[in-house]
Image: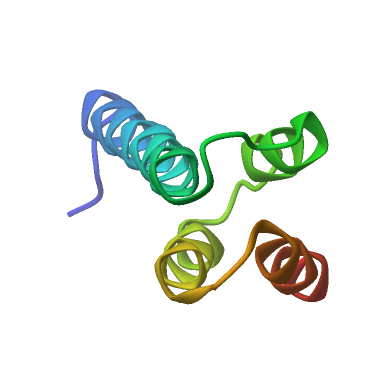
Length: 78
């Protein structure tokens, strides 16, 4: 039996919420570590639409030693 329209909309809403939460987590992690985040990095994060990539850059945000290192990682991922 297939999904109803309501179920599909609920699932889509959950995915959008997860994406927004991951974006916020990445930005917050960077702010805590480096205080100031260049606007181009925030824009790059906000333009990512795939959950798996957002998870990957969140891990990179935790591991990187500088904002420049993170910027290089995000450029490689895009």
